[in-house]
Length: 287
Image 1 (cartoon, rainbow, N blue to C red):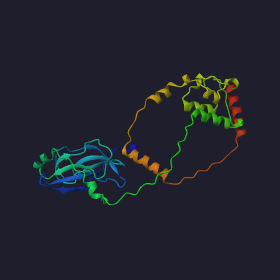
Image 2: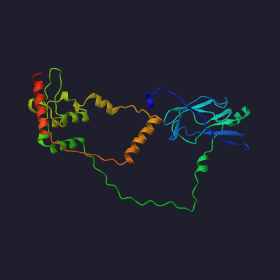
Image 3: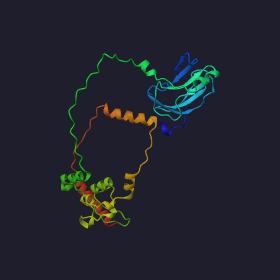
Image 4: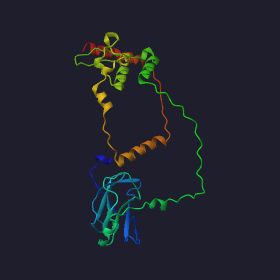
């Protein structure tokens, strides 16, 4: 939905920092990635609006962060100087709470963080560790899964044709009209589309040379279209944005976690199909 909207930016200033000091480092603020939306789990640093050494005033735009909803502006949570940027622009899938940058109150303290390497202690502080005496529950061995045998598409199509009643194997004329149109049965067109076969290179075995499904299954390999061959050899992998990843995740959950039911009905339309075939031949034969 946001792809077709005009670009916009929301500014957020969230106090997500800690003041630390030690014998080696002066007082500083650790700025971590906050949750800019209720459903945000990860973020992407689109750009840094400030560079290392810049003066930061309250309300200044510090960075632009892409969430699962939109790209939002992140304001500096504290006044001071930007001493160190720990995550460069363009980094994707940054978890909430990940350390982004260091802010110091005095300009003279910037040089102390030139070679600063963060210690990943936020996870250990928030997540309690289990005692060494506890043993994790042993997982019960599951029953071996029997591998399923893959059936080639040609065998599936052949079995489908053999199982269909003769009245349902509707075929149409294979001669070309004035516009150069090729006539074939719907099943033959479906199989040709799946296998990438050019129907214009086939000669039908049905009455008046019409192409049937079995003609497509018995077609030689050189009848495959060049478009299908190029699609099988090359493709372009386009990475998804955070919003598209969330949409895909929600669609998958809606299918896996919500029960679905389907209604089916069987209708006999043999007479209707024969009447349609009669009109079809009459129209193109005398057009």
